[in-house]
Length: 174
Image 1 (cartoon, rainbow, N blue to C red):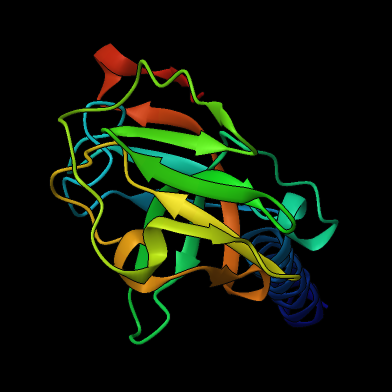
Image 2 (spheres, one colour):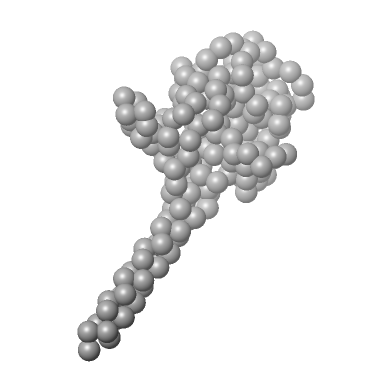
Protein backbone atom coordinates (compact mmCIF):
# COMPACT_ATOMS: atom_id res chain seq x y z
CA UNK A 1 0.00 0.00 0.00
CA UNK A 2 2.76 2.46 0.92
CA UNK A 3 4.62 1.56 -2.30
CA UNK A 4 1.60 2.57 -4.45
CA UNK A 5 1.33 5.86 -2.56
CA UNK A 6 5.02 6.68 -3.22
CA UNK A 7 4.65 5.85 -6.94
CA UNK A 8 1.45 7.87 -7.20
CA UNK A 9 3.05 10.83 -5.35
CA UNK A 10 6.13 10.67 -7.62
CA UNK A 11 3.99 10.58 -10.78
CA UNK A 12 1.97 13.51 -9.46
CA UNK A 13 5.17 15.55 -8.94
CA UNK A 14 6.49 14.60 -12.40
CA UNK A 15 3.20 15.63 -14.01
CA UNK A 16 3.22 19.03 -12.26
CA UNK A 17 6.86 19.65 -13.25
CA UNK A 18 6.14 18.76 -16.90
CA UNK A 19 3.14 21.10 -16.93
CA UNK A 20 5.19 23.93 -15.38
CA UNK A 21 8.00 23.48 -17.93
CA UNK A 22 5.49 23.41 -20.80
CA UNK A 23 3.82 26.61 -19.58
CA UNK A 24 7.22 28.29 -19.19
CA UNK A 25 8.20 27.23 -22.73
CA UNK A 26 4.95 28.61 -24.16
CA UNK A 27 5.39 31.94 -22.34
CA UNK A 28 8.99 32.38 -23.57
CA UNK A 29 8.07 31.34 -27.11
CA UNK A 30 4.86 33.33 -27.58
CA UNK A 31 4.43 35.96 -24.84
CA UNK A 32 7.62 37.46 -23.36
CA UNK A 33 11.23 36.77 -22.54
CA UNK A 34 14.30 38.32 -20.96
CA UNK A 35 16.90 39.91 -23.25
CA UNK A 36 20.29 41.38 -22.38
CA UNK A 37 21.70 44.38 -24.26
CA UNK A 38 25.11 43.48 -25.74
CA UNK A 39 26.23 46.65 -27.52
CA UNK A 40 26.29 50.45 -27.34
CA UNK A 41 24.03 51.29 -30.30
CA UNK A 42 21.04 52.29 -28.14
CA UNK A 43 22.87 54.59 -25.70
CA UNK A 44 21.82 56.72 -23.89
CA UNK A 45 18.47 54.85 -23.69
CA UNK A 46 19.94 51.37 -23.13
CA UNK A 47 23.42 50.36 -22.00
CA UNK A 48 25.41 47.17 -22.36
CA UNK A 49 24.30 44.74 -19.65
CA UNK A 50 20.77 46.14 -19.28
CA UNK A 51 18.22 43.33 -18.76
CA UNK A 52 14.92 43.83 -20.56
CA UNK A 53 11.53 42.19 -20.84
CA UNK A 54 10.61 41.82 -24.51
CA UNK A 55 6.98 41.13 -25.30
CA UNK A 56 6.34 39.02 -28.40
CA UNK A 57 2.67 39.64 -29.09
CA UNK A 58 2.87 43.07 -30.82
CA UNK A 59 4.83 41.83 -33.86
CA UNK A 60 2.41 38.92 -34.31
CA UNK A 61 -0.64 41.18 -34.40
CA UNK A 62 1.02 44.00 -36.41
CA UNK A 63 0.94 46.41 -33.49
CA UNK A 64 4.35 48.06 -33.89
CA UNK A 65 4.48 51.86 -33.90
CA UNK A 66 7.05 54.53 -34.65
CA UNK A 67 9.20 55.07 -31.58
CA UNK A 68 8.96 51.48 -30.30
CA UNK A 69 12.21 49.79 -29.31
CA UNK A 70 12.23 46.50 -31.18
CA UNK A 71 14.32 43.34 -31.20
CA UNK A 72 14.94 41.64 -34.54
CA UNK A 73 17.17 39.10 -36.25
CA UNK A 74 20.14 40.66 -38.00
CA UNK A 75 19.43 40.37 -41.75
CA UNK A 76 22.79 38.79 -42.65
CA UNK A 77 23.67 37.06 -39.41
CA UNK A 78 22.36 35.14 -36.44
CA UNK A 79 22.53 37.89 -33.81
CA UNK A 80 19.60 39.81 -32.45
CA UNK A 81 19.71 43.60 -32.66
CA UNK A 82 17.83 46.20 -30.61
CA UNK A 83 16.87 49.45 -32.37
CA UNK A 84 14.23 52.16 -32.41
CA UNK A 85 11.47 51.88 -35.02
CA UNK A 86 11.58 55.10 -37.05
CA UNK A 87 9.28 54.42 -40.01
CA UNK A 88 6.77 51.81 -41.17
CA UNK A 89 5.66 50.74 -44.64
CA UNK A 90 4.61 53.61 -46.87
CA UNK A 91 6.57 56.23 -44.88
CA UNK A 92 9.23 58.32 -46.60
CA UNK A 93 12.48 58.74 -44.68
CA UNK A 94 15.11 61.36 -45.35
CA UNK A 95 18.19 62.08 -43.28
CA UNK A 96 19.74 65.49 -43.85
CA UNK A 97 21.63 68.05 -41.79
CA UNK A 98 21.83 65.63 -38.86
CA UNK A 99 18.03 65.27 -38.60
CA UNK A 100 15.62 62.49 -39.51
CA UNK A 101 12.51 63.44 -41.47
CA UNK A 102 9.55 61.06 -41.73
CA UNK A 103 6.90 62.03 -44.26
CA UNK A 104 8.49 65.49 -44.49
CA UNK A 105 8.39 66.23 -40.74
CA UNK A 106 11.51 66.36 -38.56
CA UNK A 107 11.40 63.89 -35.68
CA UNK A 108 11.76 65.19 -32.13
CA UNK A 109 14.52 62.91 -30.92
CA UNK A 110 15.61 63.96 -27.45
CA UNK A 111 16.85 60.41 -26.86
CA UNK A 112 19.71 60.33 -29.40
CA UNK A 113 23.43 60.47 -28.75
CA UNK A 114 25.74 62.15 -31.22
CA UNK A 115 25.44 63.86 -34.55
CA UNK A 116 25.58 61.89 -37.73
CA UNK A 117 25.81 62.37 -41.43
CA UNK A 118 24.00 59.92 -43.66
CA UNK A 119 25.90 57.93 -46.21
CA UNK A 120 24.75 55.76 -49.07
CA UNK A 121 21.51 54.74 -50.65
CA UNK A 122 19.50 54.27 -47.44
CA UNK A 123 19.43 57.89 -46.29
CA UNK A 124 16.44 58.79 -48.46
CA UNK A 125 13.77 56.24 -49.32
CA UNK A 126 10.18 55.12 -49.09
CA UNK A 127 9.69 52.11 -46.80
CA UNK A 128 8.38 49.18 -48.84
CA UNK A 129 5.42 46.98 -47.93
CA UNK A 130 6.22 44.59 -45.09
CA UNK A 131 9.39 46.50 -44.14
CA UNK A 132 10.55 48.79 -41.29
CA UNK A 133 13.20 51.49 -40.98
CA UNK A 134 15.16 51.34 -37.70
CA UNK A 135 17.92 53.44 -36.14
CA UNK A 136 20.00 53.10 -32.99
CA UNK A 137 19.82 55.96 -30.50
CA UNK A 138 23.63 56.18 -30.59
CA UNK A 139 23.79 57.52 -34.14
CA UNK A 140 27.60 57.55 -34.25
CA UNK A 141 27.92 53.85 -33.41
CA UNK A 142 24.97 51.84 -34.70
CA UNK A 143 24.51 49.25 -37.40
CA UNK A 144 20.97 50.07 -38.51
CA UNK A 145 18.85 50.87 -41.57
CA UNK A 146 21.41 53.43 -42.71
CA UNK A 147 23.73 50.53 -43.57
CA UNK A 148 21.39 47.51 -43.59
CA UNK A 149 18.47 49.05 -45.44
CA UNK A 150 14.95 48.33 -44.32
CA UNK A 151 14.25 45.19 -42.32
CA UNK A 152 11.47 42.70 -42.91
CA UNK A 153 8.64 42.81 -40.37
CA UNK A 154 8.98 39.00 -40.12
CA UNK A 155 12.47 39.45 -38.63
CA UNK A 156 11.04 41.25 -35.56
CA UNK A 157 10.91 38.99 -32.53
CA UNK A 158 9.54 41.45 -29.99
CA UNK A 159 9.17 44.90 -28.50
CA UNK A 160 11.26 45.91 -25.47
CA UNK A 161 8.84 47.19 -22.84
CA UNK A 162 10.56 47.06 -19.44
CA UNK A 163 14.09 47.29 -17.98
CA UNK A 164 14.47 45.34 -14.73
CA UNK A 165 18.23 45.55 -14.29
CA UNK A 166 20.19 47.54 -13.25
CA UNK A 167 17.87 48.16 -10.36
CA UNK A 168 18.51 51.92 -10.26
CA UNK A 169 17.11 52.20 -13.82
CA UNK A 170 14.14 49.88 -13.44
CA UNK A 171 11.05 50.93 -15.39
CA UNK A 172 9.16 51.01 -18.66
CA UNK A 173 10.90 51.92 -21.91
CA UNK A 174 9.87 54.68 -24.31
